Length: 621
Image (cartoon, rainbow, N blue to C red; front, side, top):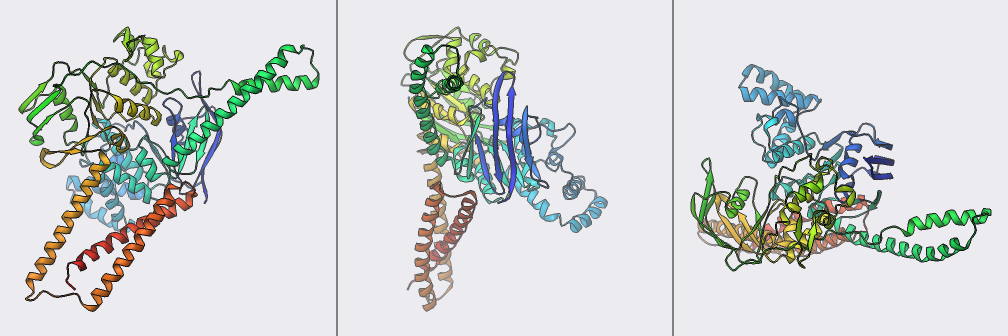
C-alpha cells in the first residue's frame, strides 16, 4: 500500500522534559492506527506536530502530496461570529461553500437566493454532499444549525468539530479522543463509520472496545521511544507484556555483567591503552542500560474510606423534569452497601440529573430521598472542578488537607500522596496550567478520593485518562467496599466495574438490569429480535387469515428452506473463522481491512437468510 505519513527522527521537549527522542514511524494508505501512552508523555503534542499545529525541536514530517488531512483537536474552539453550520462547513471547497449558502437561504426563506442556489447545487451534484452532512449531524445529535458556535458547551463543541472532520471525507484523519462527550449510540455509530471509511486514521483514545474494533495498528509512546504493534488492542496487550519481559531480562543481564566490569574498573589504573579505553567506554554504555527501571510504576489507589452503614440511599417514587420534558418518572430504588451501578442513556436523557438528586444537590419535583447517616459522597463531576491554574500542584492538595489517610491507617503528607499518584517530586511545584489534560483529571480525582468517601459518584471518569490509569482505577473500584455509581460511555470500563445497569428509556423511565453493559446490550438485542419475530408471526397469521384456506409450502419453497438451512450453517462457520482470524494478531494491515469487510458482508447475508428462514418456517409443509 502507498505511504501516507513518514515521521523521521522526531525530537521534542516540553520545558525541561524530553517527550520523545528521534522517533521514526509511518502509516500506509488504509491503516487504522491508535497512539497509546501515559498522560503527560506527549500524545497530543505528537498529533499537533503531525497536523502542523506545532513545530518539533528536530526531525521531519512528510505527508504525501495531494492528501487531504482533517484534525480533531482535543479541545476544539471556533472563530467568533460563526454558527454551527459555518463551523461544520468551514472549508474552501466550492461544494461546502454552496451548501452553506443554501442552508442560510433555506433558514431565512430567501426564495430568490434559493432558486439561484438550487441550480448551483444541481451543477455541483451537491445534494449527496448535503445529505451526508445531514446524516452525520443527525447521528451526532446536532440539530440547531444556526446556534452560535461561541456558546456551545464543551461536549457540543467536540461533536461539531468531529462532524467538521468527517464531512469532507478526508484521506487522512487525525482524531484526539473522538469518543469524549459522545453517548453510547454515537460511539457505536462512529465505530462502524470509521471501520467502513477508506481514510487512513491516526487517533488517541482510551476506549478499548473502540480500539479493538477499529484499529489494526497500535503505536505505543514509552520512555521517549515509539513501538509498533501490528494488530488490535488485545494483540497490543499481549505483545506489550512480552516486550516488557524481554526488556527486563536485558536490564537484568546488563546488571549482572556490570558487576564484573565494575570490579575491573576499580582495579584498573587510569593510564589507558586503546583497548582499555574501548572497554571503559563500553562500561559507561553498559551502566546506562543497567540503570534503566525494570518495573513500571503503577498508580496505587489504596485510599481509606469511611465506614458505610446498612442504610445508604433510598429513592421513593422520584420524578424530575425540565422545560416540559420528563427526565425521571416515578423512579424508586434502595442502594445496598458495596453495590456498583452503571448509568447509561443518550445525551440529555437525565443521567447527570439523577446523580445530582442522589447527592441531594438537586431536589426532585415529587418523591422522597432518604440518606443514611454514615454516607460520605465523593462526586467526580464530568466538568471537573475549577482548579486554580496559577497554583502549584502541591498547593492544590495541601490546601484541602495536610495529611491523608491510607487503608492501613498510615498518614501521608501532601508530597507523599502526590508520589502515590505518580506525580514525581519534580512535578510538585509545577503550576497547574503546565499539566496535560489527563494529569489535571488525575489531580482532580485525588481531590475527590482524599476525602475518604464511601459512596463514589463518577460522571464520565474515563475522559482524558490514559489506558494504564484506567486499568488501575478499575481494579480499585472492583475492590472498593462502599457504593459506586458511574455514568460512562466506556463499555470496557462498565463491563469491568459494574454489576447492575440503570438504563434511561423513553419518557423518563429507568430500566433496572442486573448485570454489566455487555449483558444488558445482549439482552436488549435479544428482546428486539423476539419482538421482530413476533411481528413476523403476526404478519404471517394475518396473511393466512386473508386466505380461505391456509396454504402449504410449495415444492420450490421446501427446496429453498432446506438450502437456506445449509447456507446459514456455512455462513456461521465462515463468520467464526473470520472472527478467529481477526483476533489472531497475525494479519497484515491490508489483510485485516479485507477480513473486516468480508465479515461485514457475511453478517448482512446472515441477517437476510435468517429473516427468509423465519418467514418460510411459518408456512406448514
